[in-house]
Image (cartoon, rainbow, N blue to C red):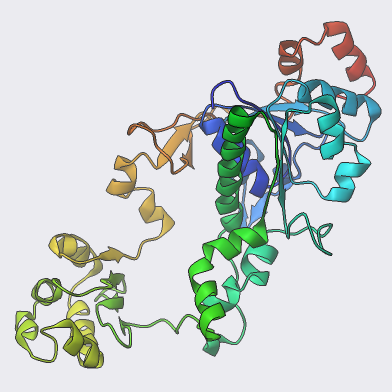
Length: 404
C-alpha cells in the first residue's frame, strides 16, 4: 500500500481497525480527530473492570497503530475547508459516522467527491447504509453479538439468559479487516478501470458472514442449534470431538472431525491401546455408534494426568487437538511467537514497549512492521505542510479554532 493515502474520519474500533490494517500494509493513514477531545475512545479508561492508562491505552492502540493524527473541528466551515484540502490529495476516504452527522458536517460522499471525484469512499456502519435503520448507530456488542444471532447460538439453552460478548472490539476487529479487504479491491478496480467506487461494510453483515455456514444450514433445514452446556466428554456422535478435563482442572480440546486413521493413535496416546482393537471402536462407523462408551474411556484417561502432561504428550498424536488456553497463554505460545503474531511498539509515555497483535497477513514470510498510535492531533502541522498549505494559512486556521 505504499503510496496510498487514506483520510480517516472515524471513531472507536470497527472502521479505524481498517485504517490500522492499511497502515500496517504501508498506506499513509491520516486520522482526523476533534482538536480538543480527540477520538471519543481515548476517554474509555475502564474496560470490563480493568483500568486503562491514558498514556498506554491498549484499546486505542490496537485500531490506531501506524497512523498520523490531525486535529480538525469539522463542525466549522474552516475545519471543513481543511478537510477538503486533505481530501484532494487522498485515495480513500474512510468513515463510520452516521449519515445525519456526515450531512450536517458536510463530509458525506457528495461533499468529498466534489473536491476529489477519484476518491474511494468507504463506510463502516452498524446496520448497513440502506434500509429503515441506516441512521441508527451501534457497537459490536449490539450488532455483531446480540442482533446477529451469535449470542443466541453461543448460549446453552439451560442458561436462560444470553452470554455477554466478553471480548472488547471482537466483531469490530473482524469487520475492520473486511473493510480493508474491500478497500484493497476498490483500489485494484480503480487501477484497472479508472472508476472510484463507494463501498460499505456493516457490523451486522460482518456477523452474518462469520456465521454464514450455520445460517445457511438454518435456512435449509429450519433447525436452530445452540451450544451445549460445557462438560468433560465427547460429542454425541463423535467422541474424538469434545473437551476433556485433566487432573488439575485444565482442558484438552479434541477436534478430530474424521477419526479415520487416528483411532489407534489416540487410544495409544491416552494409555488404553487395547480400545483400538475393541470392535466397538476399531473403525469410524462402529466408533460413532458407540460414542458414549468411547467418550467414557477418554474422560477417565484424561482425568488421570495434568494439563501440561497432555500438552506435551499429545504433540505426536496424529489427529487434531488443542490445549484450551487463555490470552495470557497465547502471549507466550511458541507457535504464535514463531509466526510473529505479537509485536512490541514504542509507548507514547517512553516506558516499556507495548505488546500489540500483528495483523494476520504476511507476505513472503516477513512480518509487517508497525508503530504506536499517534497522540491526539500530533501531526496536524506537518501533514498540512506536506500537503502544500502555507504556514500563514495554518496560523489563521489555528486562530479560529478550526485545527489543533
